[in-house]
Length: 286
Image 1 (cartoon, helix red, strand yellow):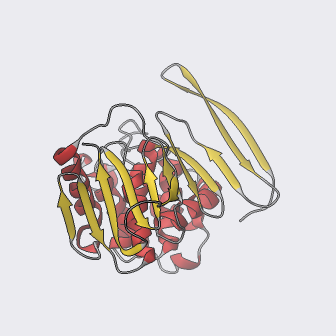
Image 2 (tube, rainbow, N blue to C red):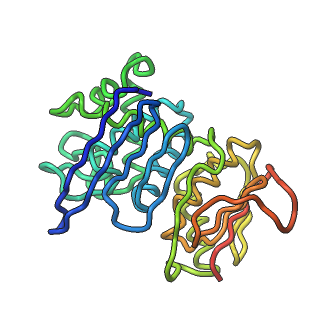
């Protein structure tokens, strides 16, 4: 973590609305960042703190899942997240420079693929990792240097400013932190019952594919993901919470902790069965 104290306050105009963006680093290196918010917030705490809205959080979780599924190391996820933060602020944009679109602002005219495919976050992330993997020695490069070798941006050093934030996100989403992704979801659920469970199942299959550690059991009230260890359990638990807003997810339980949508926090399990690190249980609104 860099220890240079930086405090940046910027006003960003989005559709005529001013949004405050605050980035702060303390002398201890702890990070607190709030990106432009378009919905309820998610806080990621893993040796630092990052705040995203639910759309950004879902995209960060998908980028990470694709990397894990491909067997890419955590540093590759850090580079991918830093790139997407710089290029699109983790939003699946269609209004980039020239023909740039998607999370990574990839250009069909530059060989990244058809526009309709680039708009799919999973396809875009997969293409990014494929390009990164071809770069000799990327593992030892600075985040910005590796990202630039893939992106060929007019601003080659721009990615580095997101390195610390991306490391926080990667630690949490790759399962190296416990109860680290906390999203608050209020209001009417996007989906309920069997439709919500089906949406969760579909999202898991699309993001993780054959990377799912064990079969997923779906029920009308939710689903259960069998896991092999605590790390994989937190990968899925954090992914589920990250996608809660658009799926109708109400609760996630893993080990001895439970997340509940309305309050958005992880709390010790006080009722029911004891700690179970063999499965992640997701319950949807009914």
